[in-house]
Length: 394
Ligand SMILES: Cc1cc2nc3c(=O)[nH]c(=O)nc-3n(C[C@H](O)[C@H](O)[C@H](O)COP(=O)(O)OP(=O)(O)OC[C@H]3O[C@@H](n4cnc5c(N)ncnc54)[C@H](O)[C@@H]3O)c2cc1C
Figure (cartoon, rainbow, N blue to C red):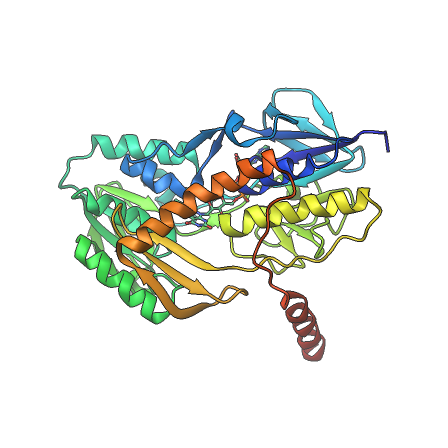
């Protein structure tokens, strides 16, 4: 390796920006962050962008260490053997280590008509498009939100608070992550906002049309505008570069976040599948896993053994419009427990969470190595148990 170690971080989201900043602890590490936009996207706030209360972008200058070189471009291919990445605008970047942090986006909708007639909200550009469509839509027109997860709940609340006529079709249960008590609270709050919630298997959307959605039970619901929030997919870059991934396309790594194919490639955030047991796609995990990926590189450079992944969760924080919210507490291994916060206090907690997720990154840029997190020291035991159970079943 040359005297200066070149690290390329692909993707400047919560995981990539955090990893890039943390790597600046060593002066002999040259960090390049490749991201398609010149600004950081606060994906946590994309429903606010749709509702018009936030732009959901922050200038990278506010959060990146001046030691990080930002290249505004898209990586088109990873050449693992040549330790290079090819850029869309032409040219290539060489690396000694690469951190793969390309995040997630909308899942490819396989439902007929969904791609043509519905609006996803997983990326900045999608949310901007949806916002323009909302501006054109008459106030009383029927809006259908497909999907009962956190994104669906948040966008439905945001629009209902503005007096829109919103129906959520969950295709199953509302808020599958939530504890039944938390779910009851969310259902009550949605009802108070005027959102009609349709739950159950027969509410799965089987077709989207320009003015309606068809449900598995055969019913049609009028919809002047349909919003698609049925989960996230990930970019295919790792798969197309010949690296092993899980079925969704997340890069397969060991517990140090190192690719199972190449010890110079690591992964973090929504696009990582450590031991094939990925953490829930969330900003909550992404920033911490990004920090852990940086630590693995720094440990290797220091001749130390990198530690296994130990990131624990707090729960799920939902905004229900601008004045209300629910904070669902969870065990560190991410199972919802019976406690939750609600009301304006939970709304404030959510707002603070959004602000802190950016502030923590900026803090890491000013003081690399300062990020700490809730540890999940039982993950390794769970992995051993799962592997043991797998062997027994075989
Ligand atoms: C409306 C909404 C609300 C949400 N609310 C919450 C919440 O309250 N709490 C929570 O924990 N999570 C929330 N999430 C999920 C959270 O935003 C994601 O899990 C998180 O952004 C993942 O971080 P990441 O760094 O892995 O990826 P991302 O934030 O997606 O960043 C990945 C970056 O990589 C870039 N990229 C992709 N491909 C390439 C390439 N080939 N070359 C270069 N760059 C590339 C992308 O453009 C992007 O900038 C929400 C998501 C949405 C859409």
